[in-house]
Image 1 (tube, rainbow, N blue to C red):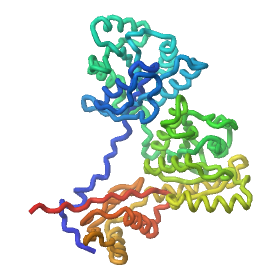
Image 2: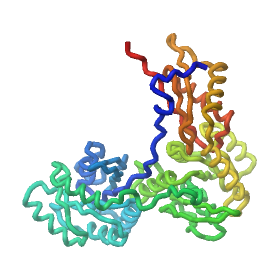
Image 3: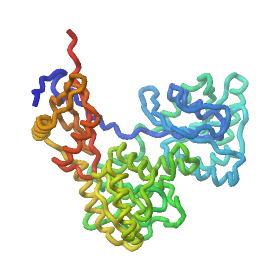
Length: 459
């Protein structure tokens, strides 16, 4: 193996394993359609990212943005407006706003100052008051002194001082942002990184695959509403459950129905909260319906778990409905569709009867062990030296990049930094990952490989 010659200092000095800064506070931006929420979001984040168009209901896709003001970082969630002509208006407003508000640490309520208070605004205010969350009231479209006087009529909403702003021109946005920072906690109120606390398990999957039934079977009582209608669960439900001699924190989540940018109303927030639950968890148990084919939705959830760097267990429910023919096709589906997560432990069970539910905890333990596996620098570089000697990187355009040195700066998930003489191909990276798993295990966890190609010295 080529000796590492400290091109840019010692390896440890160059590695930045990612500082644990914790999750940022979340600000939900709510209001009726066409009051200028997306324009205001663009003003807050300082760049034009939220889709803006002069008609209601444009906000559909990417709605979560990073923002900072006066050195404080927070997340802004731009929400879709509520259609005043929709049937069951009050019910829809309540369903959407309650979940949006429960997700956030604070709420920015946007009202069109040129229109004044509407029935829809008052319906949202009732929910905001009930939530107890801090609310900043933005009176938007205040472009001149006359409209500013009209904006003060919004005191009647009972949410405190309205901040007159012009999302279009930036007028008054500084005062509003100061008020937002005052409303947001320095760090989110709920911190889920309890040291030494119960291990955190998110139960995820598309609707109606039996997630709540599994949780009830584990808890040995009906803790969660179970209904044959898809999507009964909207918010994550945390349950502290004693299994054997250990305590676990299980998070039952709403089913991910469709792409977030196609979902609307409470479905959108349910999807968002499911992603939040995965971020909060250490292990995600993906529940699949064994009697149905692996779907595109299932694949998207798998990708969400991998992107979050969480350990994973794949649990096939409703095994009592699987006959020999279905079993044959299921094995072929697994080989074809789940090839990228072959490392995830699999269990087959039936939540309704409790058959093989006891296999879940050993699978979770195995995944956690892989997620927290650390390889010593000496053992890693001995392994890499042997690997490079037996299977060197292919020569491309007369060049052959070499691995000079490797280190594992962090676990959960296992993250490796490879110092190289040039950029390694993606196929060779996948080969390294496969061999790392063969050598050291890493059951149930994604592996992160980062490259640090050596910079050419300037002559």
